[in-house]
Length: 75
Length: 530
Image (cartoon, rainbow over all chains, first blue to last red; front, side):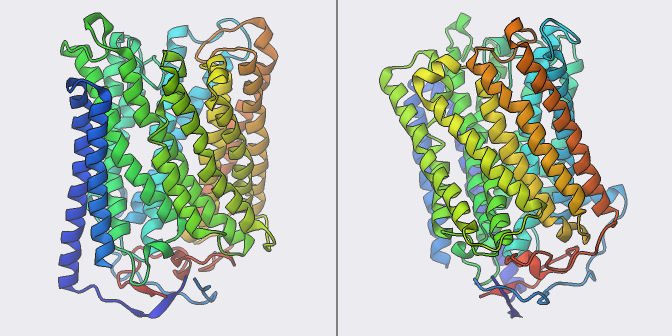
């Protein structure tokens, strides 16, 4: 892998845009963590453990797809 | 990927390096290199604490009968040894590597959330103090094993509460660290650094961070329910109130098995950097290595119940978890074969990082094979909770993660300190560790096959000989790590040859384009990767 001599730009606009993107992604990831934390406890009240885990897994999967797809689209 | 000429150094001067000095530098730092250093030192201190507990355990087990500790304290030692080594030593060490290396490898100036990075680290010492402090409260430390199974964990004293809080804190730290790592990798790569051009170490950590975000909250949920069972009258796991203790095992291992991969995937990443560098060849099958990492991570969510084959599951469940567990051998095999293929016809040299990588390769594979043995339900029923299991996971965790981390330290310490490590001392460290490790842990296979249960302070006479051998090996292994400490301190003190920007001919990743030691601020203007 080589780093060429020319450099990219990280101007003010770019920095703000990147910061917003960082916060957005962090919130998505934090929401996955929150869903798993609450879900692990809530699953006990929802009857079958399998049902709770399936719902949680689906939610996390959708969020992951969303996060990854957004990233892929940006490139 | 093309190689970088030796003298091609792109770096920054330290003109922006105005930062506090002394202790305030370390408390207030938001610099990824400082925080990486803090993580690595914290993990080493916890490694020594957990190691001291292990040596106390091995002293007690040197011969049959009760020698130096009472059984309750022995149980606390086995519990805290596990928790400290996993949450205090291996995980923070991996995060330390991530902090130091990921920004430099992807051409980012720092981690995405620098202040949160500081907070992630500084939560850890308090969690560590809670864990160790639990030994000194009335009733003693948590003593139900690192898995904290009810009913023991519901019935214990205050030490269990401290352990639960410590786990909450360490979990929060891990989740924040993971968010930081994912955001940094996805949003802050240098122009031209596509995902499929990223160093394997970054890929390994990206996948590990996703695993952490998915499973640490589950552990937090499990111990929260444990806490409410203990103090707020709920009965999630308390059979006396209609709860289900086996439910805890399900929830715990839904976290616990991916956790095994959380501990080993960063090690895979390090090995995937070291082996190509010292074979002077590109990594064989880069794309398949990435897909294998992802496959291992996904499969890790589907195998949790192989830790609990003896709880009484339906046959269909036993079969599913047995075959799913065996399936993990496929992507793991892909990785092992690719590492071997990378070395094939390479111009290999055997400096300390490569020695540790080879040690990892042989011993981790051995641990993987015993894992396959344990995946077979009828065999596992016989070997459940015996020393065979202890041998298996120490081959994976110590010869796997720890050896890879030693490889990583020797590989990157010239970049961190600007000084080459002493090759002779490092080789003594490797050979001493390799032999001592096998003396300590290989006999545990025999003990387990002969039926010696784990987590007991006393045992039958027929297990004496191998226990003595194992204890001697454990002390030898522990003392060997003082050699490592000496080698590292010598580098930090600058006593050694000055490290060039690129000390390893085969190093091709971006960090080798920076001077050694790496400047305090790097890649403020991103490089463009071709």
